[in-house]
Image (tube, rainbow, N blue to C red; front, side, top):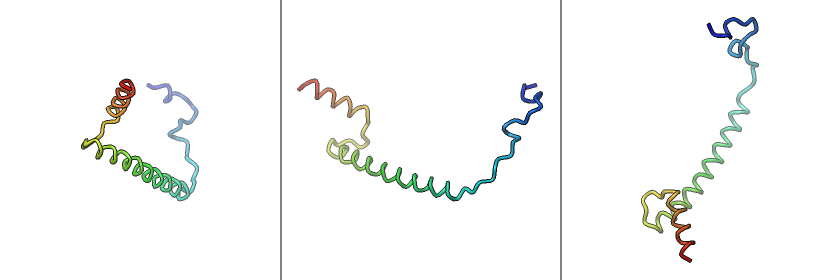
Length: 75
């Protein structure tokens, strides 16, 4: 048997959780999700401009860095 089964103290799964209202937490999380989605959209828009200029259907992040380092080395 596991050591937890032999102990006389309660395990974390048997300790009752305090009752706390979740509405404020959910609202804060929802607001954070909205902000993150907006940030993702901004970043995707930037990448979209780069992809259109280079003619790529789906830009590969590592590839752009490689191009930049190659261009830097040539200059």
